[in-house]
Length: 275
Image (cartoon, rainbow, N blue to C red; front, side, top):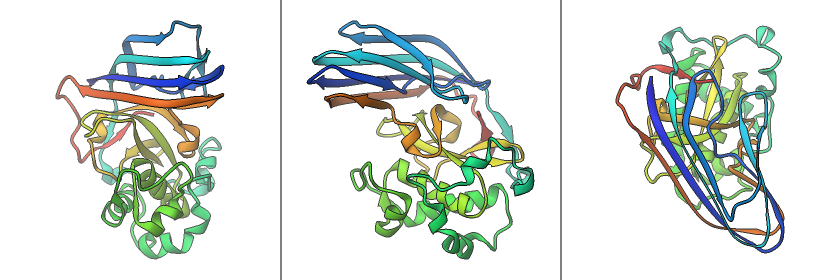
């Protein structure tokens, strides 16, 4: 077990009454124990906590009037991941993939796996299936996509990123997810906090279904997977935005922090699951 202290602060300028759903609190899972949780908003207004899906993802619903608005969240998260040897983790044959996992084989808004089948088969089809094939996909994305802040926007998909060969963390995850799905490997997007990430920010990574569990991967290699705190989980980033807004609200600033407060973390070579 190890603990990560997380904190985020978002500020908006609101022109007319607006409705927000924030996705900034760690998800409830058997591997994430949340303590010292604190949430404040300014100006003070009614806060509604809600469950956004069956994966433990929590939303914070707020209605706010015109003016400056700020929300601040902090918590300590004790992580107790399942740790396995990568060599033991195999891909699951399609006939026995659980029905709740099947949707993560389908193309989605940002992950056009149906357009990448031939490419994925040529690059990775000859490799033995399992954890190491997914790691090979991560290595390929890391080596062929440049991490450049501001190089993509909310409309950029995995295919766009493959063409321009540049993106940010969510794009690295989208490309990796798309290639996995094109090979028949269920994969899904995860957004959250990452201890050790520089500069600090919300981080997008992904996880893959192997041996009847979900294992985390990150093609950016910018922070250790063992320090990831899951917040949002979905088909791609469209399902995991840290803020969904209906109304006229302009984003002003954001501050994010994730700090590991002990060193009892799994080895970087281990396969880690916190689903």
